[in-house]
Amino acid sequence: MGRRVVHALLVAVNAKFIHSNLGIYSLYSYSLSKGILPEELAYCEFTINQNSEDIISGIYEEKPNLIGFSCYIWNIEIVKKVSREIHKILPDCMIWFGGPEVSYDAQELLRENEWVDGIIIGEGERSFYEVLCCYQNKGLYGDFEEIVGLAVRRGMEIIITPEREPGSLDEAVFPYHDTIGLQNRIVYYETSRGCPYRCSYCLSSVEKKVSFRSLDLVKRELQFFLDQRVPQVKFVDRTFNCNPRHTMEIWQYIYEHDNGITNFHFELSADLLTEEEISLLQKFRPGLAQFEIGVQSTNPRTIKAINRKMDFGLLRQKVAQIQEARNIHQHLDLIAGLPYEDLQSFRESFNTVYEMKPDQLQLGFLKVLKGSPIHGQAKEFGMAYQSIPPYEVLYTNWISYEELRELKLVEEMVERFYNSMQFEAAITYLVQQFADAFTFYDELGKHFKRKGYFGLQQSRLQNYEVLFEFSAEQGVDLELLKELLIFDLYVRENLKREPDFLGNRTIGEEKKEWLRQFYQNEELMEKYLPEYREYAWKQRLRMTHVEWFQYDIMALLSRGVLEKKETVILFDYLKRNPLSHQAKCILVF
Image (cartoon, rainbow, N blue to C red; front, side, top):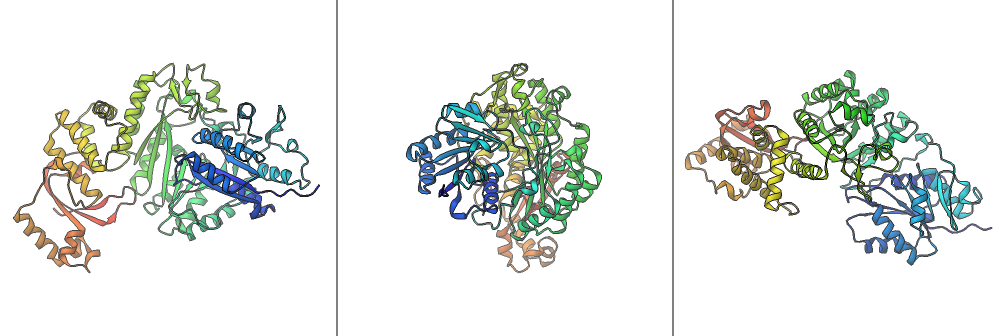
């Protein structure tokens, strides 16, 4: 039989434009390395925010006769919809699904979606290549049923072939050869697959082993990112620091070859960090690395129930050690809806983690993923969850739907007013006026709901006004709060127009004269603004900002103590903190 001409298309529907799809890049690169020709295989990327008609049209223009869709919880519904219509338009085109969302109930999914020809289960590089070879009748396989790791439709019958054993990660082909199409997007990269831990809510818990990519390969690939001056590389390794030697060599390499631009994102377990690793991390350039650290809960019974291995006391100690150098952004995660976590327990977890002062605090909600151990325990824990992706928990034996809705309000407030890093001084003070941090965000969320602000797009300045409005209802000292908000406003940007609640402030002639003398004084300029020596004094005045305060706001931020003390702060916008993007604040007096 002659070789069948194939034009295969790998399709990704990403959550956002800024994301890229490592999965289809890896399948594409592997297949080409094995002899599939570039004219025989292509890939395209869309986002879930695009009109489905545009996605269908974009796929149709390629005229493929075999399509592989990359499937995740965030895109499976639109993938089903698009693939169904593609089948009508291109009835002879084979349609294959692959990815974590379809690997654990492949038989059921094929029964429910009769237009899908097959599903690649688990690791996809080799399986997809063999599917292409089989389709081309190259002779490697006479039938799809001879390929391991597949669910295949055969008339009315669905055949599940034997499981494919995970291969060496060194067999994966580095998917990046240039950065065309990746400008302003996150580049994803992996140096390990699997996870040695067995957290019951995570799909990685069912994988049998951890495979590491050889460090010689990793270093060459890291150098590519550094040479290309990629803005951010996000490691997708599930627990990056589970192997100390692997971890240390990679961190040593990026430290020694830092290009001053590239940021590397790692998901890790902070309690596993060694003193040697922390000593190296404290030498990193600010912004070279950022960490995502899963705490999930501080309730010991909850941690045990989800089979998570964590020494929280040690985790807190390691997070504090990393914070000392103020050079690494730390993002700490909590999950609501876990076993044995009621509202009061979650409040305690929230307050404990908040006191650790992470750069960002992510409040997530349990996803009961198909194939995860907790999916099989849902009945035991009284868990009701959404029937369609993202399978988010609705209630459990310990927390009600109403209470989870309340936590959604808290999540929104934390995201808007804490994680944005735009209200640091005001929030630091306001939280101190409430029983605890959770109570503050809870009350603020209820205010938002009462006022009907949810679902509305507020500008940054409108968020300041809303916070001021809420604080007025709480009986807060508004003159003090104005000072704190003024600081927060100017530490982010040199405003051309202040929000209305500040009352159209003006400065008197005495302060105008002070500013003139200050900016004309070359000795003071050399002391405070040496980078501005080439500019005329009026240019320096416009490019920076000076503000008078009646309180020592710098002390509030550094020590958590607010004292009444007249200060003058100079905001330098050329020098920004790479972690918070705030202007450099110089205490003039």
